[in-house]
Image 1 (spheres, rainbow, N blue to C red):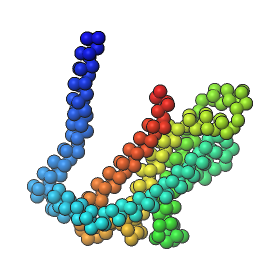
Image 2 (image 1 turned 45 degrees about the vertical axis):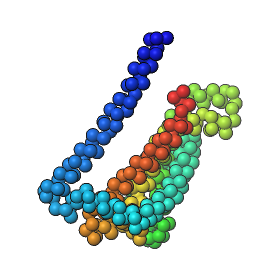
Image 3 (image 1 turned 180 degrees about the vertical axis):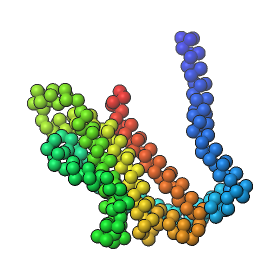
Length: 267
């Protein structure tokens, strides 16, 4: 009992130290980048219009936050991303399940989908603008296209990667097809599906920023392009940091959901 108490005390002392070490390790690169930016911007090596000081970037952030532009642009972009991402993910999941379970469906659609997959999302923008204008509809469809293929491919890989022994066992005991889908195929493919959802979210977020830079009247991408035209590099950097932070938050949320859903695998 005494030895166990000593070990517990040692572990409790190490835990705060381990946390501090992890924080220090994670903060080394960001702090180094901030220091390099501060040095280069304050030394005069680059003109302020190209590399604005950190104080100017902070001022631009607080200004756009207090006047409501930043929140307005963020809500505009996220609302469109959410619509397109949900639609593209549902389509990709449904098509992936069908193509993964039924080889005939895969042989029928795989050549066309594989060809369309090679077209980058940016290449669709001119055609979508011609068809649907510069409103939200064209952007939603662009995001549906961008998020569809990552979810589709990973769902197909997950479904086809289910061990054949489980399927033979299900057929042997004449398990219903619905139960095979929800108790064998989907649980076995969930890890791969979540990878597709993460990639789809990243593609969706990048697609909306690119689309707004080309044709939009609001949004994160529009504000970056407008600031570029006005030579406001501090505003450009603020919105670039915002894009990275929002993308990281989206990825973190999906990973957290995946850990919760897949906790039975670890158990």
